Length: 111
Image (tube, rainbow, N blue to C red; front, side, top):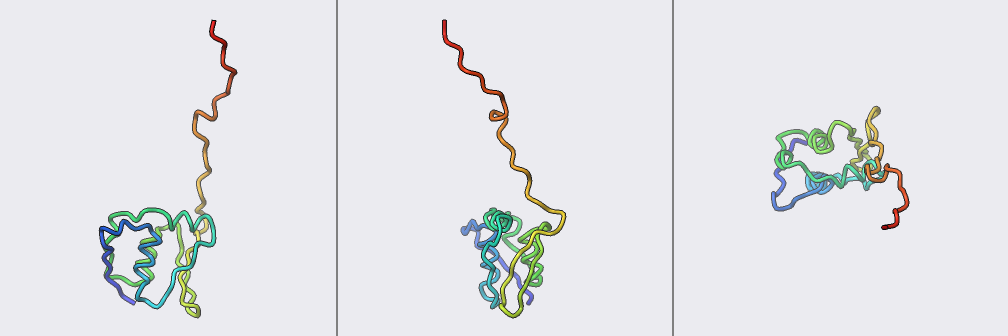
């Protein structure tokens, strides 16, 4: 399917919202987030440069929305679209704020 899509600017969509919008008339559905990784993808705000895409294939549109770290997986029997993290990509290590890394000393009594 070749599509040309314009996301309404007042929508302020997440990536998931944009994917659902793109799929809305395609006959396909978006898989629910099955991992923390996918949930992170879905909850990111859509970059403004991606509010207008096309003409391009539905698959390529979804790939652009997801970004290079993600692989589009389509199940033609169930007609659903899922995303998996490509090999070599991983979530960054969570880091504690610098203030938490400092040793804590008891407060000195005031003279």
